[in-house]
Image 1: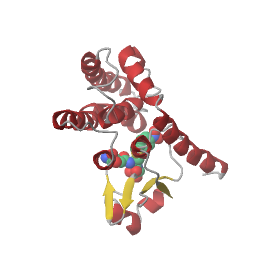
Image 2: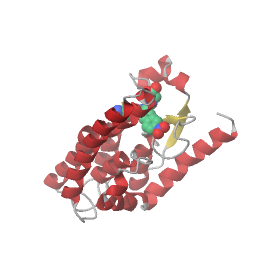
Image 3: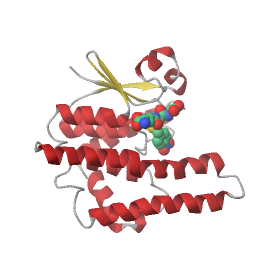
Length: 218
Ligand code: GTB
């Protein structure tokens, strides 16, 4: 049975692969699981039918048979647990890979999102420069720590896993800030993720949606 995920009908990132359906698409591509995509507009996301699937009125969601999930982390974990390829078999290594997924979502992503959203919400205030300095410092502290742990290893803990997938996606949210570029090992880590064939297929699929939206004037 083919799962169905939801994604933006017209993503605000215009196909840069920064919306959170990208991590689910990438996970599904890594394990070779074909999937359908139901595109939703901002207003559809807030309608009862979508709220039934996602209590917060967001994307992505995942449906397969009688299972419906929201939260990109839970979806990627579910995919990784039910298909070989994204989690090691050895129990301790598997737990560590899941550990890295949580680290990406709970420790590294929050300061990055805070920095990103501060620009949209507060960027016009005269004092924004000072706030940005503080927020950027928080991001850099996390990246210092992460870069120290990664060192010149290829992936975070042995073979590529869902933990790496999630961390690459989180670091990609710094695109355009120039911050990740100051960390050569982290930039190389992101580039390695982006070079994976499964990543490229997922990226092309979400880019095609954005191009179609542009052609339709959405
Ligand atoms: N914790 C949830 C998860 O991980 O699944 C968060 C889901 C989420 O934030 N979804 C966003 C959404 O549906 C899209 S991904 N927003 C609509 C709403 O809340 O009304 C976040 C996102 C959006 C846009 C960009 N961008 O343009 O670069 C990047 C990321």
